Image (tube, one colour):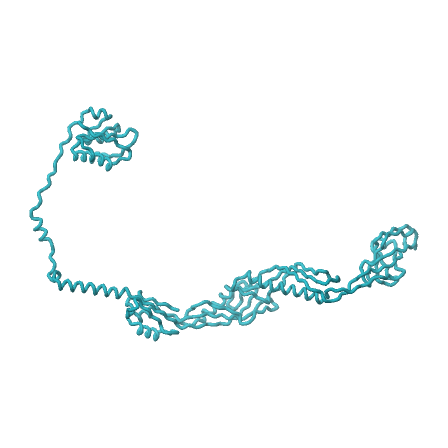
Length: 494
């Protein structure tokens, strides 16, 4: 007998196997389980496949060695074989007889039952006039709903505004740690280090030393030994005008033995032209063994006049450089603080001059004079947040009833701040706060909804204190009344 052999795969399930059975045209259908792959078909699935094969007029058989499948198939009466050869040669047994289902005859009175169950419409609904009335009512309902929800309105008002101004005395100092209602606020400090240099053309004549005075010193031995007088031995007058020997000499042994040695002043200028006998001091240990004096006056020391900077010019140049650095320090300090923080100008001061130098130094002539300095400045400022904290507490209490803040608060000093000898900066702070009269949106909606724009504007103008008449715009523009529903009306306050 012809047999349709269907080899199952691991991905087959009830639906795919059933589809494969449907293509079979033989009286026997044999399902072959793979050896090394698992096909998941439960006993219920096998029962469904058996019934489907039966509906096709075929007998279902299985080829498998899996005990659970064999047990389920035997329970359902499905022939099971271990090999394909055994299935083709073996005995399948008789297929269970098929039961044919005969549908019951149709009921003869279905149409009558349908006609009796149908609910008949009222006569007025089936008439042309009734339908026209119903259609008109529907259109009217749609128009009424559209008139409620489609129109939109915007009411723009400008309530009364004014400025609340207040003058607050302020004391700022680094010793204050927090803002006080009495007007005390902390002053913040910062440091700025700058370098500056400037050169000017000298316009004065200055006297500078030109030549050194010279002469001779007579050394007298106070001991019995010979004494070596080195070159460069320094002798001086009581006024500490100093000279040095130009060469080495030997002072003969024996008391009151003398020797003369040429000397020259250490500093140029006429101040070293001293009288005879003015030199009396020998510097160093040699002064214990000998004495020195000038038998004759020294001469040759002189000054010369040349173009150079006077003391006034030096002082003016120094002041100019420091003033320029102070302006630069002020600009640099403003960069380091907030844009709206207040820099206390008169508190900007020189903290330390780290180095300064004149070129040429004092006493030397030169057609130009250069001054360079490295300076550290200290600065103070008041933070905007502290000023606003102080002003806000006072302005809040000054806002009139039914008004609220409507803009940015402005702060300005009434006069330039000044710092007293105690280090406290004092000034009067002028604080201004724009305020606007409160507008009740619910009141405006109650006055306006359902009315024409002119009437609504007049009622709002009368009920509220406004700077100008309310502006009302409608959408669509041809609509004549404001919406009845409040959420279709927007209130804009300028």
